[in-house]
Amino acid sequence: MRKYPIIILALLFMLFGSGINPARAAAGFSNVSVSFRHSDSRFVITGNFGDLAGKMVTLLIFDPEGKPVYIDQGLTGARGAFSFQGPVSRPVKGLYKIRLGGEGNDAPYETEYEYKQPQITGGGGSGGGGSSSPAPASAVDLGNSASSQVREEHGRQVQETVLDEARAAAALSQVAVRGEVNLTVSGTAAENRITIPSPVFKIMEEKAVTLEIQTESAGYTLPLQALEGQKANGGLVLTISKIKAEEEKQWRQAMAAAGLELAVTPVEFKVEVINDGQKQEVRQFNRYVSRTLYYAGTGQENLVGVVLNADGSFAPVPTLVTRENGKVAVVIKRRSNSTYAVVAASRRTFADLNQHWARKEVEQLAGRMIIKGIDAKRFNPAGKVTRAELAAMLVRALGLSEQQTGSAKAFSDVPAQAWYARAVAEATAAGLLVGYQDGRFRPLQPVSREEMAVILVRAMKLAGTEVKPETKAELAKLQDWQQISTWAQEDVAAAVKLELFAGDEKGRFNGGNKASRAETALVLQRLLVKAGLM
Image 1 (cartoon, one colour):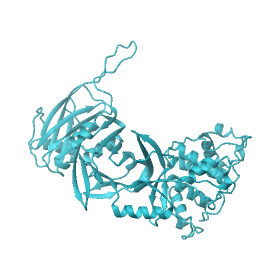
Image 2 (image 1 turned 180 degrees about the vertical axis):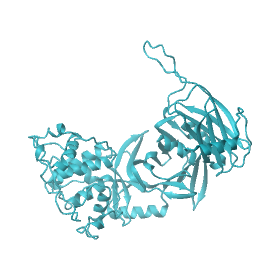
Image 3 (image 1 turned 30 degrees about the vertical axis):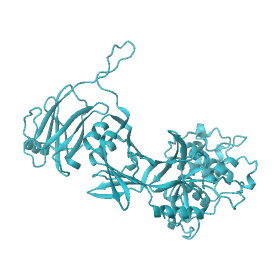
Image 4 (image 1 turned 120 degrees about the vertical axis):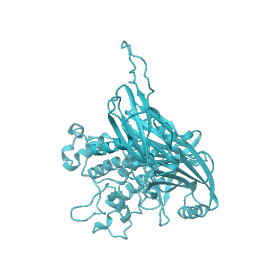
């Protein structure tokens, strides 16, 4: 909502006149729809002004006493469509006047809307009647608001789908805040581009909805809050695209070299915001975003989502495998967009894990390429974990990109050519690990249990898990809590409450002890499961 000083109000009144004539249509306005959304006390006004984009439309809303209660301006979108949402606090019963002015139009469009107070449904002996308006829906479908066209581009089919602004706005007026908005795009085109015009995107953004896109080959779940801070005055474009034949050949060659088996053909996911007519790709989100690929086989235990790094290596991404409408659905979660494939991971085991208490967790994470042995046959479960090793494990477990340089160059003891340099860069950029005041990272220093608890609580927060500060009452359940460093006590308590860590048979946490490789595998596996990343 725009806030206008009195002088601007006066100018607007002079521009539009002072009288209201119900339903008087100005030339150029058409398909005007006015409704009131009780869920958040807003007028929803949509329509068309002419048939061109970029024309200014001004809205004024007057209450039953003739006082202006809302003023706004906006530019028309495709085919002259416009959409406003005017919040009105404490609306009163009676006729509200709606006045629309269009750029270059002398006469405004005027109509009225009769507001009626919704009845509150009574319970028990209250004697209340039914509600005059339905409750907001938890989900709406935009299928009737979309139109698609298929064309040839560089020898393959591309399907363009565009949401109609007026119809989409009408559908969105029915959805609750933080509800779901579904759109299924049919057809077998290799590439699908879905355009969300600016007025529609604005409504979605204000309602903080989650957008669910479904195509023949993939699904995309995008919470609009993941785009927080992104300017998009021209709308949004989402692209779901099977990779081209020459790219698939490169993927298969790289997989053969890595000893991996391709289970699902790679698919690229892209989000672009439009600002001042220019597209800008959104590469990073402020939270995890889900994409779904479908596996044609029957087995599902060893399927893992991967990305192809610039150096030809593969990196795992957090993956959940479920069944959806009779199909094996591989859900890939990550905080950035890329091209994703699914591999059938081979079962990994190590000779020194026979009868070991952490064997299951180690083999799970090894099969997902998150942890590695010290050689092909040994894991060394009792070995200590260094800060560099933990950084690398976290980067792989959380699907962070090792291709970014982050802040590793700031550490005097992290050589650029070190095997862990990129992992340290990404882990520190994500705020999981920090350096020391002397400018060093100390990559070869073993990690204590209390240090690991602090780091894993940070990882849980990064994954979107709510972590509440724990009190000394929770900490006091540990027999040796007073030996835990003061700076680590709150996070140790949280880690124990989250069941990432537990005390030993005597109820001691042993915070100063160095974490073993087996312990690290165990708590990492617990973290991924509890954060919904595995």
